[in-house]
Image 1 (cartoon, protein in one colour):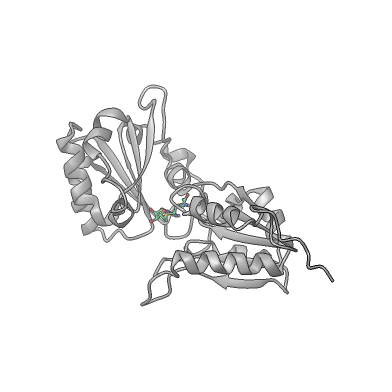
Image 2: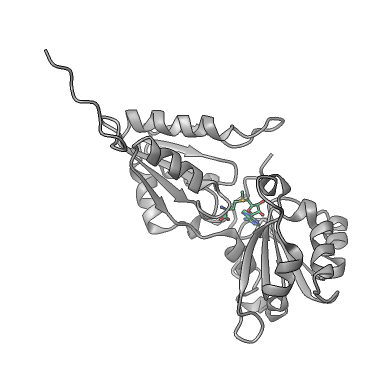
Length: 271
Ligand SMILES: C[S@@+](CC[C@H](N)C(=O)[O-])C[C@H]1O[C@@H](n2cnc3c(N)ncnc32)[C@H](O)[C@@H]1O
């Protein structure tokens, strides 16, 4: 008896299902895309983390195998290699696997790493973009991230040092000179340092700035402040994660009348 041919390099393992890297949006469940909803309603397995709106978990079929890979209270997040291993294992046992991530999976979501790992293992993988918090949270506060007369460029940037450790740090002074607007993710804890760097890079002390906490959901909070006072005011007012920081003249273009009412659902706070 002859044994079956080994799979060609890069070809899916026998019977491999497809992993969909799906953006869950920023919190308001109504900001889920139609494609994401269709996949959630038919998936055989779901892998999700902390910032995923809990209301979306109810969309999956009753028999769906669920895995939480986010941070639990008092623990670190599940290490990335373990999440990768879970995804490969599920792909060997199911046809449709949804890897659900807050906002957009390819924007500060490590979706690129997961996609590369799955592809290298020969597992079919597809990305489904989502509405990112960096656009939605300012929008729910009435702030456009670009504006014809106040901002022709915008930079999405991480304020999280651990991520930056892998590479040279973010050039905040350079960004102060080169980008009209900044949308800063995970920047709250380093806000004093970030603001100092931006001021040293040439931004005026009265540059309009904002912090939006829990954008698009119940408890959404907004702080408007000149850049020089932003960090101190955010601290004094007890702003916490998850928050988006916006810096630039676009903040002064805020139209409060256009802000939607945040959804009446709780933000799954990262522990
Ligand atoms: C790991 S990043 C994930 C970003 C996500 N992939 C996206 O596209 O929105 C997590 C950070 O996104 C921001 N964030 C996510 N959801 C938010 C929300 N509803 N309101 C404010 N900031 C939010 C915060 O800066 C938070 O620390």
